[in-house]
Image 1 (cartoon, rainbow, N blue to C red):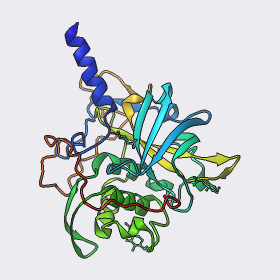
Image 2 (image 1 turned 60 degrees about the horizontal axis):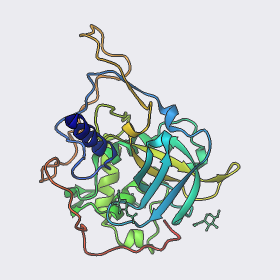
Image 3 (image 1 turned 120 degrees about the vertical axis):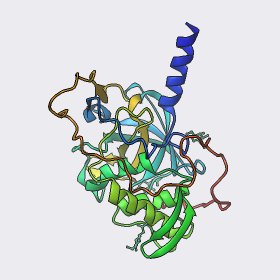
Image 4 (image 1 turned 90 degrees about the vertical axis):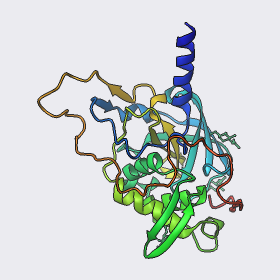
Amino acid sequence: MKYFTLLSLALLASASALRTQATKKDPTQGRYLQEVCKVNHDVATSPSEVTVHVEQFPGENAHFNITLDDPRYGGKTIADGWCIDWDRLIGTKDWSVDIYSAYSDKIPDAAVDKNNMLPNLAWLINNIAVGDTVDEVVQGVDCKGKVTWVDLQGGIWGLVDDVNGTADSDYVKFRQECVAQWVRDQAIANGGDYKIDCKDPNEQIPLVMVIDAGIVITNQTIIAEMNVHLIPGLCECGTPTAAPSKAPTSEPPTSKPPTTMTPTTETPTTKSPTTKAPTTKKPTPEPRRS
Ligand SMILES: *[C@@H]1O[C@H](CO)[C@@H](O)[C@H](O)[C@H]1NC(C)=O
Ligand SMILES: *[C@@H]1O[C@H](CO)[C@@H](O)[C@H](O)[C@H]1NC(C)=O
Ligand SMILES: *[C@@H]1O[C@H](CO)[C@@H](O)[C@H](O)[C@H]1NC(C)=O
């Protein structure tokens, strides 16, 4: 009895954990494609608007804390959030949003500049985390640094948005440009055709949140990093069939582990998450450009 209670608490804790240095995907482990899982992206798409609370600049881990309280998204959850839409504005408050799986074909075209990069964005949030170390030549420049949330945000804009900032903005002033480019370039090089990995207990899906009035998108499109196991029905995993002579049908068995990702010098799994800020400077970008 006690054992089960503890076990379920442990499972709950791991299911609700956000992806950090401690919970990031182990690049040596590869993906768990042996079992056949189907991902039902429709259940992650809300049939009507959902009220979420957006907190801008919550700290060193993300651009936003996004609080949801809806059984379709695991009850009360705080998710790390990112801007994917430089041109529109948002701020700290409750917002009524339409929620889509990043893989949904129902996302309004006008909401995201480079919709084709959304699978790469899913790769990015599962494989790159604040605190990662960069030490290599990026775009011809010798680049060394630790990824901060501002760098990660810059890489996300570089990946999915036509604009990644304006030179006079704090988002550009406070980021290490080559580190942001590294984030973007890794996602472009390794994240194409990325598929949600239901066998990873920490797997995150980008939930795209769109704020509109009728067909007009009024405020910034954002994403929340949501653990796939918190969304009931998203992962449908059957029992593995005994040695099928044919390859499983639902997922191509070709995906290789992201071997081209730069190995960090630290072991990703044993490190406990540091609460320390990666840099001493705390960017305070203008709220209007978020
Ligand atoms: C943001 O969310 C994290 C959990 O992911 C929490 O530790 C932190 O206190 C939150 N910060 C704010 C300002 O809401
Ligand atoms: C939301 O967008 C409107 C324009 O559509 C803008 O006037 C308003 O400032 C935005 N809200 C925030 C909090 O940025
Ligand atoms: C931002 O945009 C500039 C101009 O297009 C580009 O040179 C730079 O590499 C971009 N940075 C990122 C992080 O995408």
